Amino acid sequence: MQIIGFDVSKKELVGARINKRGLVEETYTVENTQEAIGDFLERLECSVTIGCEATGEYHNVLARACIARDIPCKVLNPIVTKQFTRATVRKRKTDLTDAHVIAKCVLQGEGQEVSEASFSVSKRLLRTSAELTRLAVTVNHMRKGFAEHWSEESSVQTTLCELEKHIAGAVKSVRAEGVRSTDHQLSELLSSVPGIGETLAATIVSEIGDVHRFDNVKAVIAYAGLDPRVRQSGTTLRRNTKLTKRGSPYLRRALFIAASIAQRHDAELHAYYLKKRAEGKRYKEATVANARHVLQRVYAVWKRGAPYVVHN
Image (cartoon, rainbow, N blue to C red):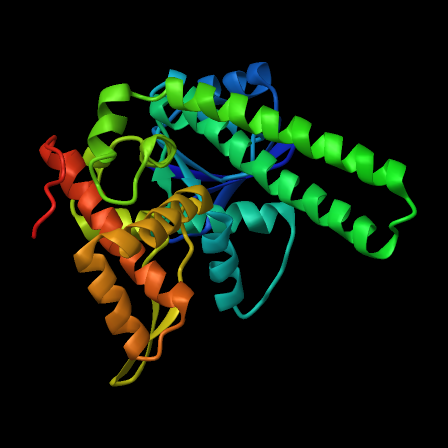
């Protein structure tokens, strides 16, 4: 089995094939088109695993081409490759060195293998609605800034107000379509967990994909990037409150919102929140801790296929 790491850009892929020792044996430059990538994959004479970073939409052509040919393709969070690069003595930065780093990360077991579920329509729709929501917040701040400091520019305020309303309408429409595109029975099952409603359930389902690919709850917590960083030096082992943030920010946000709601109404989570606050944790830190508990419940409910039962 050979590993090829690709640094993906809009126009081309720069690749490096490595051996078991992590040494580069061959390099490639491939145009980022369906035809060029297909021709390259067809010419490969040995079994390979492909690796690349998540790059918005640009890596999708490569990933889909690999799926169509049953070639394993692992997508890495850019945070992972950046951490790997920082750990090296020579911090070189070229497309080829990036491809080499990606290949080495795959060799060490990093990355999530893509499947058809990775390209679900609901995920793209719900992510788009989240991005539009952030845009609406930005426009709202602009409008308030004009109202406070440039009140005489009434026409600009009116324009920004109308834009804000249009974006809000687009958010509602796109989000509703994303919810409709998600497995209704599964979303309804996850909605039994306190703090999770229809939209959050759809987001969690689309971001996780298939919970059965995770062997245990720690794996899905790590996938969500909700696990704390661990630092060790000699016999000293220290944890801090910063997260690894290796997974989807959309999944983390959904779980954080669910936890912030649940800890106001669920007795168990409320007690845990108060305990963390009494220990000196800030609101965000205490809520993130509860987000892990919410994900544990989601994992259990999804695995069992039975709704969550509130314990008195």
